[in-house]
Amino acid sequence: MSTPDPAIDPASSPTSTPRRVQGVYFSLLLGNTLAASFIWGVNTLFLLDAGLSNFEAFAANAFFSAGMVIFEVPTGVVADTLGRRVSYLLGTLTLAVTTVLYWLLWFWEAPFAWWAVVSVLLGLGFTFFSGAVEAWLVDALTATGYTGSLERVFGRGTAISGAAMFVGSLAGGAIAQATNLGVPFLVRAGILVVMFVVAAFVMHDLGFTPAGRTNPIRATKEVFKASVHYGLGRPAVRYMMFASFFTTGVSFYVFYALQPYLVELWGDEGAYSIAGLAAAILSASQVAGGWLAPWVRGRFRRRTTTAILSVVVSVGVLVALGLNRNFWFALVLLVLWGLVEAAAGPVRQAYVNDMIPSQQRATVLSFDSLLGSAGGTVIQPVLGRSADLWGYPGSMLVSGAFQVLATPFVWLSRRQSEAADLAADGGVGSESAAEVPDPTDR
Image 1 (spheres, rainbow, N blue to C red):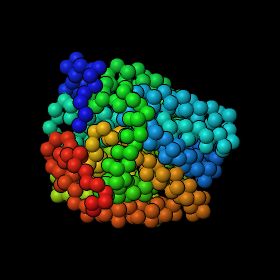
Image 2: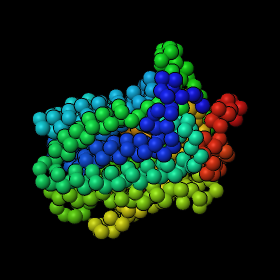
Image 3: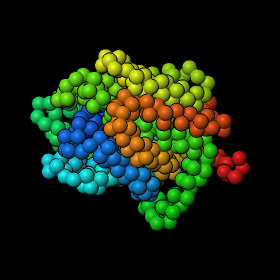
Image 4: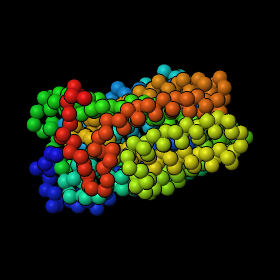
């Protein structure tokens, strides 16, 4: 574990205790999710309203995922060399600008090529967040002496994100209904500017010294090399990354496809508030699932058991959504899907984080996000095309087929018998991430 940044006095820092660290982390999650969720409930309708087909709309989402694939590792290295705070600030500015550009494309009814370009840049904005904020939290908790479980913190974060998503998605749908589909995007950009100011004052790197303050080029090479070793080079982590290719790729599609799917079941194409309802229900489920995460962890001896069960249940829900034709039963299935995803997410986060050393944490987590984004890049256009051919119910069945492919990889991760799979409430990093075997020793 690296030492605190000497330029920052931990005693005088606003994040000098575990409680304060969590407070800052939850505040950042709250603001980020609130900003993002203003458009989550109407994004697909927004793209279709701009004149794109289903295939083009989900292809635009795929270009967003492609942007995350392209920029995940470079921005992860930024976080590990220049600092997690710098990465976060760059992310808020990039997302604010590209969100306004998205609104302009809708206003001008721009051709698809421009949507592809700006979607890639949107992906760039999100990659500054992925890995950086989570790495900042784990290192700061360690530096301030936190002795609780990561599942508890990640679970509360999931719940808070869900609450913000509930408010934002409902508000976004209502605002779109009262005005037009473009206004929620402008609201999102404004909130991101506010978050930039907040983070500039309250977020400081603790328990981590940005390598770029000594020799950034050499540090970048070293961090990248070590991240490949501790990420793809560690079988248990590698297989969880491969599983995320399918789970994240499918989740991206399903989340956005649920908007027109529910509107279609409702029977009114102009019911934008129904589209917002989909995101609101998922957010409420996320709140409950986040609080349940520590309890779920306690029910099973291994963390990977939770991961496997979540994949199996998700497959069942997607198949049921594909066969269902009743609006109200679809809402019940939506709640179940959200609960399972939210309860299992913090357990997976804790499992992976317990196997990663501090100095490479942000970059390895970015590798993880990269694989998920790659799944979104490949899977979303396929599922979007399936929706054009067989409707949204048919695309849900195909989604279930993709999702089940994640199961063997989670099982392979489980077979590595890592100490992190059995870790109990013993504090951050219950397994020394420095004790990583060389991949050739397996």
